[in-house]
Image 1 (cartoon, rainbow, N blue to C red):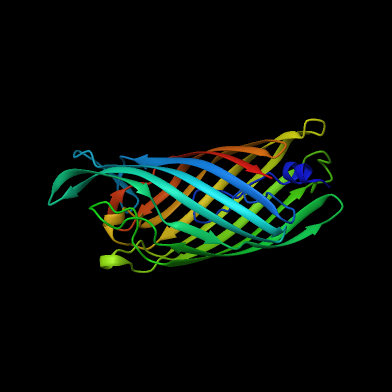
Image 2 (tube, rainbow, N blue to C red; image 1 turned 45 degrees about the vertical axis):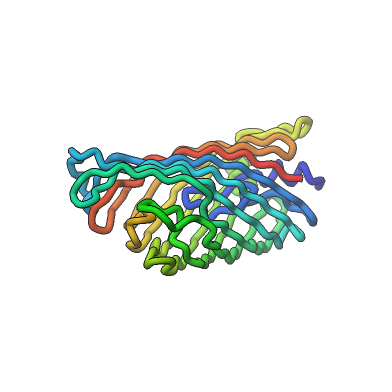
Length: 296
């Protein structure tokens, strides 16, 4: 199978609610020796909903938090089972928080922490189905600024690990033409203490994607996927100066992926199904994301 066909068949993607968990480009391409890929993603999330535990409270002071992330990402494959990746975010974030009992507006922007990873995969190609098992060690380098009342980074060297399984093909005899896709990913980040006592808190998460391929045109090498995503995560309490989320959350929503030749586009919207803050704080809110990736 040629390079462009690999991209078309395996353009389905890992969920990206936790940007530290997924891998570029769309986690699946390229799948040949000496392949390169680049990806640009825009992520928006935020809320003015104030929670105490899982209970929504009145918010007369107008406390809120909104974040925009622009991710520049790349991948190089030694072969389809061994690759290295980088992810570098540019952050724009703002919040209204209490300082001395008085609402205070804070803003911060700049480059965040560089994330490096080495995804390792074991593929199986069956008659009507292909799948893979993944192990991804990751490291986050403290390249972001720790200064100011609303820091871009906690200044720590952090380590992560992801275990995943995904498959795509024709699983159901009753639906012989339905190309089904599913993915399950468990990840953990040890977020250690950084400069001046800053710390984001350790994080554990689960991502699930279920969907199918809408169509694929061999002549133009064009197709699309639709999926439903479920993302659960728990993060320990950290230093409020970084704006780190502390609590439990479950988000879910639709995902759409389109590809043509070596170009891939992804859009998703995740809604909160459940949130519980440790203590009190602003909810994470809805998440919107658009990504554009290319492999060569």
